[in-house]
Image (cartoon, rainbow, N blue to C red; front, side, top):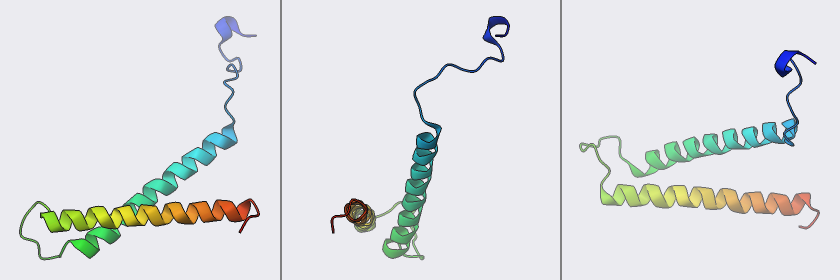
Length: 89
């Protein structure tokens, strides 16, 4: 043991390093999906020739619906994949 615990192994926190890395990977994947959804929905809903700095009501509603559908689809796919992994189809 070193003086004042310096250099000693840190106390166990009860966290599994593999779980932490898995969660970090999931967070990165979610961020990437959000970025992709934003790009897809903006291309779909906002014309390239806009003249106003803000979205109009129709564009805003379109983006909201598009992103909502995107994440609802991801949720359904994730649920189905979990069912398949558990052996139930």
